[in-house]
Length: 118
Image 1 (cartoon, rainbow, N blue to C red):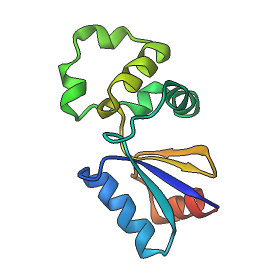
Image 2: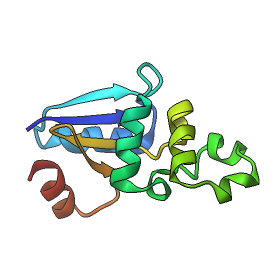
Image 3: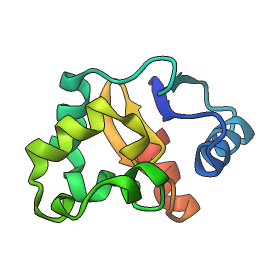
C-alpha cells in the first residue's frame, strides 16, 4: 500500500494528517501543491471521485476572491479553476495506491484507519 498526501506544508489540516500518519507509522509521500501543482488530468480524477463541491476550500482567500459567478460553476469549470490555482482545493487530498481516497481530514479515527490503512 502506498499513500500520497497532497497539500501545503503550512496548512493546519495537512499538519494534522501528516502527524496522524506519522504517529501510526504509516509511510507516505507528501506533494506540496505550491512546488508541484497537480495536472489537469489529476484534478479531473479528483473531481470525478469527490465532486467539485467537496473539494472547495471555502475558507481560503483564493475562494473568497472569486466573483459571485462561482455560484453558477459546474464541476468542469471548478476543475479548471482547481488546476489553475491549487489553493482553491480543500486540503489534504489523499490517494491510496494511486486512487483518490479522501479530501480533507475530518473523520473519526476508525473511519480514517479504514479508509487509509484498509
